[in-house]
Image (cartoon, rainbow, N blue to C red):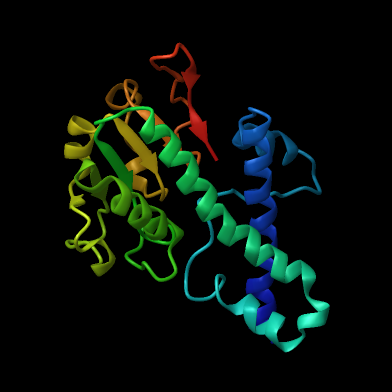
Length: 221
């Protein structure tokens, strides 16, 4: 029970951050700046949002508590639903961006469930990438430095596995799904002309980009 509680606690706190990112998006605010400023309060420590919650523990363990006491766990259940729903939110945001750029090549950065590992179990990044690859096919290029082959879920989509240099050279749109150090290290000069959807907040210096209808666009959260 202690282990389940530890992971449910993390899940609930991440859900707050993920929900805040969606609210901030609706209000056209930078969630990373909101969190940074809020965390200056000595008793506030908001976690960082992302495209969902993954891994074999945090994304799974809270359900054991919910199933053990279904009538007394509305908060834990809701947190799970918020974090799973964040995956759908990211897919919708990415699709809207991609549809505004017909024919543009798409670089999807990361498949692991957290930074600098090769574990894809319950990974929200992988779920987002698979969904986009199924819809946009050969336009999608996957960058995952911790694997040599794409997972079986990508079979038949037409998506390709490329290195980060190839993605920077060929892709017009970059969607950051995992905060690998290799992605953090990409200098502004190599991405300043890209349309970017940064779900991990790793590029705060990324400028908004003017698109065809005159809007400035920089998607975050």
